[in-house]
Image (cartoon, rainbow, N blue to C red; front, side):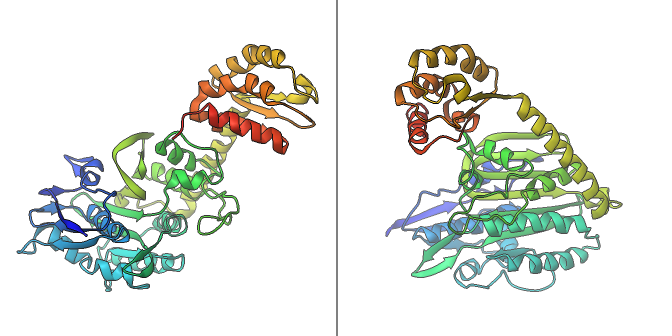
Amino acid sequence: MLSPRNLKLPIHYSFYKKGIVDFDSVLQHMDFSVERREIIIDLSSCDSSNFQALALLIQYAWYLSTQGCSVSFRYAYAGSGSTKMLRKMNATDWRSVLLTDGMDFGSGPGRQTYALRRRADVQSTINYARRAIQMYEVGFPEYLSYIISELLYNATEHGRRQAEVDSFRVAVPAIFQFGYYPQMKRISFLFSDLGVGIKQHLEQSYPAFATHHEAIIYAMRPNVSGTFKAQSEPYAVSNNAGMGLNYSTLMMKRLRGDMYIASHNGLVHVSPEDVTSRQLSSAWPGTFVLVNLNIADNAGITLESLMAEVEASAKKEVSQFEDGERENIFSVSMELVFGQYAEDKDFAINYRDRYLLPAVLSGKKLDLDFQNVKTAPHSFLNALLATPVKRLGVKAYQRIKIRNATGVTREIIDTILDHNTPQM
């Protein structure tokens, strides 16, 4: 093993910088490329932090452990600042929690940090959180149970990670952490995992996405995030209606809360006013979600009334999306245009320039139906598709839909797509 590497945290280690949420200020201190090295996470000078940032730090220590690193913490002698906060989280036993199946971050009615490995952990965690929040003498509205359960199920279903640590095969837990901040009348929740991330997860069933934040936004659409095709475990799930994340984000907007969804270097912020996205300077290898919500402002809202509003909004969104999709698709029956033997290269070039390229440039998707087309050689297909694919880049996988193509034709089209899009 190489010489020890000291990771000295700054005086202020927090998501919040002058009232602005800044994840890069925390993530920039995490190097996920390190392997087989002794790492000392030095908290001796870290005077202030926030619990959610420290929860990510614990998962970072877990990640390093799965990379063959020997990880230890150097705490402040006085037990102040972030050291005191970690002890309050019962997180100094972080390594035992990783290696011992079923072990959690301590016990007791007031605990705020939980390790989740499987679906069975979700309901018990919600029950613990409900009791803990009641201790603050604030209510625990049922809509919080809904939002928390949806996000926790995502973390335990799609954020699973198996790894070997010191010859032990372990299920790396997801983390749920919450805190009540009476001075701001705010409750904050963090859900974090070290799974494959939203983009890779979606791409098991959908065409490739150009960026991680584009994939997050797509997952927020109705009927998307749960509709995964049957593949090998653990990511092959089809028992979800695909509305969980969509409903959660609509709820947050209605409740005038803030939800931040980060996956790899993608970040999406759902605020009361709008939805914005950007690329993070520093990436997180899985997914985490931060929720900030003022419960006092929503004291009179019930889950039933909120769900009724959300369902109406979701139906409207689905209808608008379907109408927009119909208006923005250029459909081609290949048999009607080119015949059962689609072989005329010059005709393909003429049709491409006259119809396909203008459709692509106007933002339309191409829907090419090869029903009853018996042959379509490479020269024909390349003349028809290579230029539109080059214009679209990696978005070609999303904006060109091929239907009913035979095996050979499908293989030729896939080759054209691969050869004319930049390699990621």
